[in-house]
Length: 298
Image (cartoon, rainbow, N blue to C red; front, side):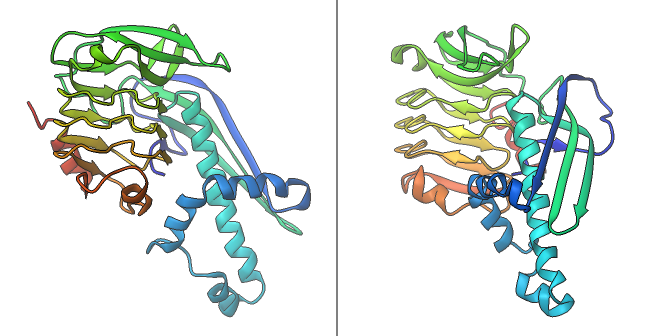
């Protein structure tokens, strides 16, 4: 959930402005379909929040304390949370890693209407500094996605034992997806670093990469395709800064040496059930420990 920087102010660093982003959400009948769609879209994350120590009291507790208005208050909190997650998601899809100047408006009359607007920007560097060892770009072809608003990076070749960086931008557009062209070429990889704008890793993209030891995901990554890192027998370290929304079947599996490190405080139970076999370990770390892990092989 926490994988894009959001602020009501400005950033004290250089950045590129991508454009305005906005969202409006309501429980009124004319807008209710949108609310239902977002509840389904963010169902897993919403359940994590509700079950965490940070969740607000249940609607029963609110109504006991504040009467019928308490139930409206509970629903309002949920709508605010959903609207914020949606505007972050829209910014991510544009290739942003930060959302600045965020403004919120709430109207409560016979229902509630929540509006957010802000400016999607991309800082010059990832929110987590790239390790120096990732200084290779390899031979990469770029293909426009179906909506023609971003590129898919297709890796063709790279040097032996490469620590390969997948760039976040090409030709003025963000790189949204990553895949590989030929199996034998990705076997050369020793490390993979996905820059901040990348959202999706294709199915079977790096499976059977026998030399691969380390993978560092970007803070914007949302989808890891099925079998993307299957049978990477020497994979030791996988760094995930925050939660990934859609992890597909056996995305990281049959990797006997692998440990996944994440800053996510509430690790979804589905991670272990859905995309990994028993040999893959998951460990929660704080941000300081995570930064130390970025230099694990230097």
